[in-house]
Image (cartoon, rainbow, N blue to C red; front, side):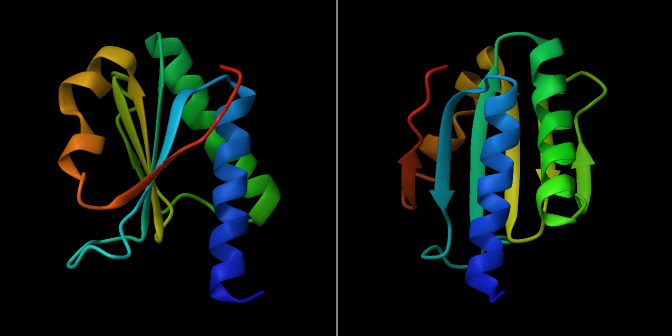
Length: 122
């Protein structure tokens, strides 16, 4: 598997983990065209309670490990579950509580990058 295929497979696993717990308003921000970024992509979603945010993040970690055999490099935010960050190297996942997501507005902060909304039934 080449690097692009690995990244695609990782994205699919992350999205699967989010969808299992019904994460809301999934957005992928492609940072590859922006200079001086730490990763290639952000994947952003939110839940409507701290319990759901925590569950989404744990589902992502479990699904990624099951589907790709990769573990998260770094995670933070589980203590309060308002904003959980999962760093998989080339992809960083931000799982927000809904109000926290609107407050920090990462999509607006990274508006110069391409972004894609993922259609879901959530």
